[in-house]
Every structure is written in structure tokens, then in C-alpha cells.
Image 1 (cartoon, rainbow, N blue to C red):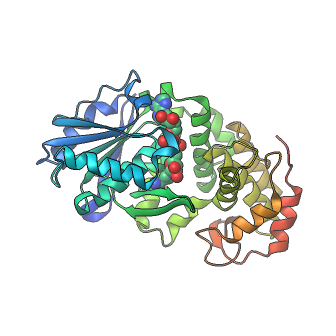
Image 2 (image 1 turned 90 degrees about the vertical axis):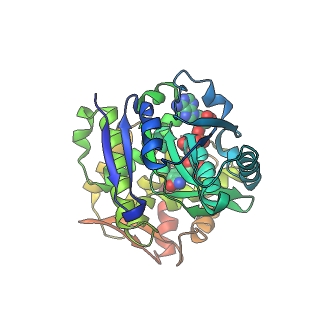
Length: 352
Ligand SMILES: NC(=O)c1ccc[n+]([C@@H]2O[C@H](COP(=O)([O-])OP(=O)(O)OC[C@H]3O[C@@H](n4cnc5c(N)ncnc54)[C@H](O)[C@@H]3O)[C@@H](O)[C@H]2O)c1
């Protein structure tokens, strides 16, 4: 299988996303091409990833390994501080390069450190989770969490290149895989591909479809003013579920699973509002079922708290805003009537 190369066309900030088995082997060529004056590369990653069989990266310049905590724990300001201090001690300068190796947690924190260290140094993302390859590594959004909420501090900082090596996915735990599949299912639905086409599609082709979709959407709307907001399909409820979970909720959902539930919910809400019919809802369910993703609210969820959290959603400039389908596409719909949301929340099964 060959590699697929997608250019994210953003004028002077354009870069390629390369998808395929073994594409991590292109790292040194990418760095010498896009950061020709670099003498040092700071590789930001975790202990878990360094010990994986595919961790054999050749950057072509001197490297400094910067180890950060694994998973979401990496995404806080103290890790940004320790990472930037590590950059400074190793003599990293503006002409040098940061190489983020990992999933969305790593590309978010390393990307943010790169955005701010010396007011901006080049970053390459080597995405190693399904979610990272189809979503987090593409588009230049970086950031970390605060105790008050997720992704509250961040910056737009486009990478100089993204390598999505599908060989690295062989070691990915199942739960992480499901998380990426949630975003892939969302893209499939946003593209309005029929569910009946799914059985013939390879994993590689799914990663490619979703990565291309993200790249094209970002191009049209780099700063997330318009079209890019459609990528938040399913995310109003997903964010509410995630904030309840992190506040001590009794359920355990990965991001993509929360998105899947959010997408199933958004389809039903759109039907209740007369925007789509039963067939479109059935299509949503068939796509989610194909990927074995959940559609129902988890047991023990507090529906009232979900409603309150959705009204507070960061992207909700108006009360209760959702991305909703209609007969010929998707749009951001503000001021969705609260009774409709309440009714649908009450109807979704409360068990898994
Ligand atoms: N910037 C964006 O546009 C954007 C978009 C979507 C999500 N995100 C962020 O991404 C984060 C989630 O990222 P994620 O789902 O990729 O998870 P993650 O980066 O937290 O990684 C999850 C786990 O998988 C392990 N792992 C990663 N690659 C592996 C591999 N190839 N083999 C074995 N183990 C591997 C990691 O060590 C970690 O334990 C969230 O914080 C979310 O906010 C950002």
C-alpha cells in the first residue's frame, strides 16, 4: 500500500499530511525540507511510546528527548512550563524544530509549547493514535486544560508537516481505537456517504477519508469561524458527557464514544425538529452500529446536569446550540428549544 499525501493549503502556512504504512521514515526529509536551518529537534513524547516497536525515528539532526506524562495528564500548564524549560536547557532555538510523537494529548501540548516557546518554533506531528491521525494532528489547534475546563488555554499554530503512520496503530489499545472510530463515523455521516458502502472500505481508506475531510475543512476555515464548526457534529452532548465524567460521573467513555452518543442524539433532535426523517436517523444508527459504537446515554448519567452543561458549552454563543442535519446538509443551529432537547434526553436509553 502506498502513502497518500494531502496538502493543507493555507498560503505560507501550507503543509502536507502524509498517511500510510511506514511514513515515519519521511521524517528527516520533511525536517530538512521545511526546517533547513534546524540543528536540533526536541522530540516530545511519553515513556509508553518510546518503548513501542515502531519508535525508531530518524530526524536527521541532533535530538533531545522530552518525556511528558501519558494521556490527558500531559495537557496542563505545568507540563508546558517543564517542556519549555527543557527546550531552553537543551539550547533549542527558533530555527530548530519540535517533533510531537503521540496522540492528541501530545500533539496538543507539544504544539502549544511550540507555539509559545520563543514566540513560535516549527512543529512536526507524528500522530500515533487513530484520533490523532484523523483529527487532532491536523488543523493547528493546540492547547491545554485548566481545572476550570478542557482546552481553555491554547493557540492556533499550524505544523510544518503531519505524518500519520498507520503501522503505529498496530499497538494501539482497543479503547483508543474506538475513540478514533467515533470521529471517523462522524466524518462518514457529515460526508453523507451511505452506510451500505461501509463493509467494502479498508481501515486505511477510512483514515484517509477522515484526514482529507479534516484537511479540506480546515483549509476553508482556518480560525473556526464557519464551516469548521460543522466538525463539532455530536460534540455539544459529547462535551457535556465528558465534563460530567470528569466531575466524578460513574461512567467511562472515550472521546469518540461520547461523540457517537452525541451524533445519535443530534440525529434524533433533528428529526424532532422536523429537519430530517426516519431514514436519516436509521442511517446514523447503521453507521454507528457498523463501528460498534454506543448510541445510548450511559447508566447513571444525570440528565439535568447534561442539559445545564450543554447550555454552557464553550461554542454555544446562544443557549443550546447544536450542529444538526437537514435534507441537504448540516448547519449550526442556535437557540434550539429546550423542551425538544429535554424530551430527547428523556427518551434516550439510560443503560448500556
Ligand atoms: N487539536 C485538535 O484539533 C484536537 C482534536 C481532537 C482531539 N484533541 C485532543 O486529543 C486528546 C485525545 O487524544 P487521543 O485520543 O489521541 O489520546 P492520547 O493522546 O491521550 O493517547 C491515549 C493513549 O494511547 C497511547 N498511545 C498513543 N499512541 C499509541 C500507539 N500507537 N500504540 C500504543 N499506545 C499508544 C498513549 O500513550 C495514551 O496512553 C484530547 O485531549 C483532545 O482534546 C485535539
